[in-house]
Length: 191
Image (cartoon, rainbow, N blue to C red; front, side, top):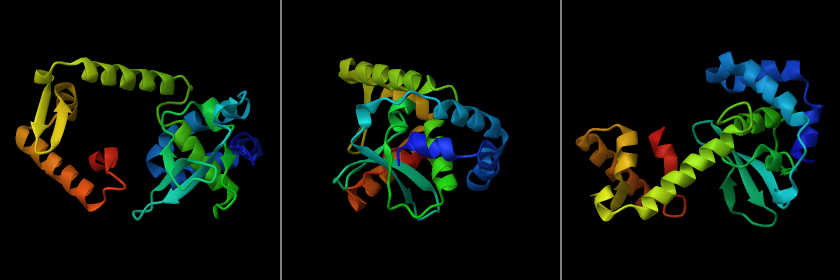
C-alpha cells in the first residue's frame, strides 16, 4: 500500500486522539497535524521515489524513527528533507507490525518535522544547501579544528557553546564515531 492510500484511510478524529499519545510534546499542535494530514490526503503524488519504501525502526529509548529504504537494499535513509509529494508515493513496508493509525501518525510526524504547510522542507533544504556551499567556499580560517573534527565557525556559533563545552561535545562525537563507525551519530548527539 502506498502512503497516500494509507493516509486516505485514516479518520481525522482518530488521528487527532492518537497523535498526542505517541508524541505528547506535540499535543498543542494537533490541529496543525490534522490540517497537514487532510492536505496530504489530496496531494498529487510525485513518483520520483517510487522505488523507496517507508519503514519504521524503534530505537532503544522507545523513539520510532521513520526511514526510507530502497527495494532489496538493507540501507536506510533519513526522510526529513524529502518533499511530501515524494513521501506519499512511497510504499509502506508490508512487514511493519504497527497498527495503520500508528504508522500514519509516525509518517505525518516526519512529514511535518519542519512545519505544517509543506513548503518548509524546501526552505530548510535551501538553508542547508546555502550553508554547505558557504562552507565549501570558505577560507580555511573560517574553520575551527578540535581533535579530529573540523567545524565551520558558523556551526560553532549556532551551537552556542563555550570552548570547554564544545571540546567536550567534540570528544563525545569522536567517541561515538569510533564505537560505531557504520552508524555515525550525526545530529542525534545534540538531542
